Image (cartoon, rainbow, N blue to C red; front, side, top):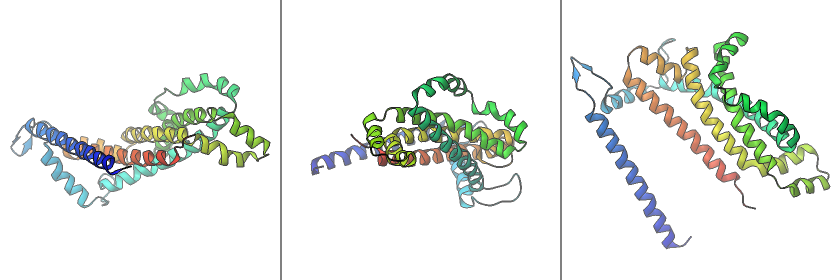
Length: 269
């Protein structure tokens, strides 16, 4: 990249940042102007951005306190949610990648099972919650299973597509060299299908983060979803708005991580 291209890219990046900040200022001003003034110390309607910012500062200043079942810091709630998601998402990813590789290598098997996959895929993960609660009889693990169901299908579909799209020459050469199946899996199949697999993992991560918030609203106890519902019951709308912003922020950070991973595994033939 020459100097002119570098300067042009820098200017373009600056324009994007300035435009984004201006948009944020406009949204905050619109929000503030449409906030009704407080009456008797109580705000009518949604609280304004300054009240939310004040509450956000209080919560960020001490995010990991634990004063009982219904009084935990925002950091503690996020740790519980991320922990549940990590377990369900990790298990689902392993299962989905394994099944996706099998289905991608054997098209006949994929065509035979595809009707059942298409039936199960559009079912909302929360629809499984009553069955999980009845069979597992543990609300925390039921939430983990909801994460499992929400994470399974995007990774499975993308893995099967990525494996089925591998050039047959790669597989034929590995067969001629008499490479063992497991070595072929880790040296040929997974690296070749890595871009599609990571794309599926990225979609699954977003689905899992959305599902855990909804599941925790149902199971109660701990987690960012339960925190939002509990604060709503206490009519603490400033806490609800801040928690919503935190959910979005964590989702963006997770997506950025997978976007960088996608760049690492992308290759050109």
